[in-house]
Every structure is written in structure tokens, then in C-alpha cells.
Length: 497
Ligand code: NAP
Figure (tube, helix red, strand yellow):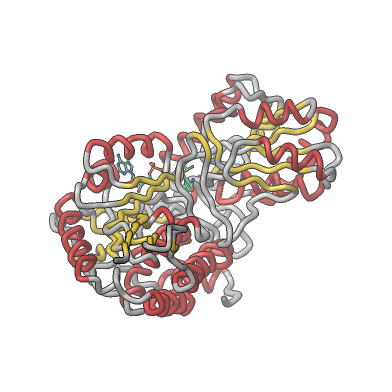
């Protein structure tokens, strides 16, 4: 991707043509009700485009066409090698449109252009390419039966799958859902978050251009409470894959039970522990401790929001993290030098500000940030914020703030670190830093999370599964394990005469 300057990205943003219509049955269309809502640029509060606001009636027509194409077998029974060609072509087209997609994501989410160009778009390409490459390398099983019969165990697509995704990583999360669901032959209806639908809509256009048959992928922007709930209660949708908050995830399980028991897979919230022993490479650990919580403005499910430090280095290590917080002061997301952009919207900003007040009231010590900056921009920019002298009972240490707020607390020994790390309703991710591999592995093994880093944070790629323990969810995105969420096991038992 080119090394454009801020002025060049601003010019590209002005010239960008954005289509906010829904994508149903292979083409762009308005909501049946004619309703739309403005999509707002979080960097300046200005309207980018009006986006179709779909309702239950749009979902119903999308399900009819998704079901019809599934039954026809155009995609669901296509040879895996042919599905692979379409997915790889799709990934290539996303690559051809990489700058446009990075810009769209930055404008829609407020993410720094440096991140959308180097992380979000490449990650979506890799996800689709990897899933496409994998699909014709998966074999079915023959069970170890007696010789007078033959038992085949196959994985078949679920049918019509709905995907509901959040606003914090719209493009990557969408790719994590679509790639395995489509690779395994399902028809998919995607509901993006209301405030960040633009890249999902655009890559749907590119999917058609790549040869995906009409009706196999549909993208319906619309409100979670109305459209999302209707989808979750729909009795002709066979599977539901969700990334979002824990309270909404719990509701979706209820909806699945109230309707047709659709397979429901959830990727939910987190309150991740980042454990630092005194013998760690403290320079690297401090740099990554700041990145772990401030990346994407802390609006990251895996954010390392609980920094659990060995007591002997508390003062020294807290100073080291404070020294690195300045790198994360927010700025214009179209400036390639910006590391942190604005919060997604005023509501999220207010919620973070409330948690800063709660931290103060709980007598945590505010040692960096804590307030708004760049208020004149029209966007909601929050300073990177650090609370020292916290403990794990405080609300700021237990509740998901989903903003750039770090709680620093201490431990006495490995058992204490493990106890604190596991004292959470969440179990999504975490990390431990130590030069002693025995200590590091013992701690990593005992912390109940889906992904644990040793001497790194945010480790992982398409080869490994991603998802949570406890109230962080029950599904797995990425890797071949994700294919299991989108397939049913089917046994065929043949007896010979
Ligand atoms: P959210 O409020 O749960 O919304 C997520 C999606 O669900 C949105 O598309 C939303 O639509 C929709 N929705 C809301 N209420 C619904 C309902 N009653 N029925 C059906 N759908 C409904 O979460 P968020 O605030 O967008 O995202 C932040 C959360 O996502 C955090 O908790 C974060 O940890 C989690 N997350 C988890 C992962 C992971 O992989 N574990 C990754 C990223 C984020 P609207 O946009 O219209 O409200």
C-alpha cells in the first residue's frame, strides 16, 4: 500500500464515492421501508452517507433468497475446489481495492489509517485467502466399523447462517465470520453494527464480482434491537455467529431457544490480565503493556486492561508504562503518524468518562490522562488513561470499559498472579512476561482464557483459533476449528449384502 501523506488521504476521502444501500440478492438496494440513518465520521462528527436501515421485512426477503440458493446447491454443492477459486479471487479483489477499503474503515470507525492499511485490510485478505485455500484440503472420515459395512462421517454446511458483528473491528470481524461460513458452503446474512456498515457492504460488491452467486451473501445494515433480534428469532436461519457484548450474547442464546435452536456461537467481552514478573524484559513488556490497552483506543475485546505487576517492580514498571503512554495521545486518524484515533461515538466516550469517575471514587490513583482532548474537532478523543494502586475488586478492574483505561495492580507470587487473573467473569485473552520459561508456562497454563501470550501480547494468526472461555463466549473464529462452527456432522451407514 502506498505511503500517502495526511493531505493525500484527506483528498482521497473527499473524492470517495460511498454507497450506503443494503446488499440483498446480489445487488444494492434501499430498505423496503425506505428508511435510512446517517453514517457519522467519528473523527469530526460529520455525516459520511445515509445508510439503509433494514428491518424484519428485509431480513425475511434475504432469508428467502439465501434459502433458495442453498437448496439449489449452486454454492452449497459446488466442488470445494471451485468455491476456493471464487474465495481467492475475492481476496485478490479486496487487495486491488485495499486503499479504498482502508480509507472507508478509517472514516467509518475512526481507526488510524496506519492501522486500517497495515492491519485490518491485510487481515481480511489473509482470512479469506486462507479459508479458500483450506477448503479443498479437508477430508471426510471413514469410521473403524466391521468390514461388512462402511460408515462415512462428513461435515455438511449448516444452511442459512446469520452473522451479527460489532463496530470495533468491522472488516476483520466480518472476514472472520464470512470466510469459513462461505468456504464450507453456507448462505450468509450479515448484520453489521449500525454505526460501521461501510466496508462490509463494499466487500459484498467485490464478492459478486469474484463470482459468488446471488443470494449466497447478503449484507443488511439495521438496528440490533429490531433487525438483529428478528434475525436471532428467525426459524429459517440455521446458524447464528455473533461477536459483541456479553449481555447481547446471552440474549441471543435465549432467542435461539425460543425459536428453532439455531446453532449459536458467541465471541464476547473481555477484561484481560497482563502479568509482568520482575525478571521479564521490562522494556518490551512496558511498550507492549501500553499497546495492549491503548491500541484501537482500548475498544478491543482482548485489550490488556488489567496490568498485574510483581510487587517489587510496581513503581518502576508503572513509570515505564506512563513514559510510553505519550505515544498514544490521540490525533487525526487520516494522519499516518497517528497511533490512536477518536472513540466511536459520544455514547462510548461518556461511558469511558463515567468509568474514570468511578476509578477516582474507588480511590485508584490517576497517574496519566483521564480526560477529553481535541474537543474542537467535533470528534470524541479520550486521553490514554492509567490508574495505579488499583485492586481486582474495583469496578474498573472487573467491568469491561472498552476505552483507553488501564488498571495497574500487584501480585506477590505466581499463585497470587493466577488467582487475580482468573478472578473475572471473562476469559478471552491474556499474557505473562518472564524470562523463566517454567514460571511463564505454569502461569499461562493456569490462566483460564482462550489465548495466552508468553512474552508477547496480541500473538496469533490465521493458523490458530480465537475465542473465549467463561462469559467471553463459546465459539472459535479463525483456523480450521472455525469450520466446525459452520458445519453439521453427518453419518452415512452402508451395509453390504
Ligand atoms: P453489542 O452492543 O453487543 O453489539 C454487537 C452487534 O449486536 C451489533 O451489530 C448490534 O447492533 C447487535 N445487537 C445489539 N442488540 C441486539 C439484539 N438485542 N439482538 C440482536 N443483535 C443485537 O456490542 P458492541 O458495543 O457493538 O461491541 C463491543 C463488544 O463486542 C464488547 O463487549 C467487545 O468485547 C465485544 N467484542 C468481542 C470480540 C471477540 O472476538 N470476543 C471482538 C470484538 C468485540 P447495533 O449496532 O445496531 O446496536
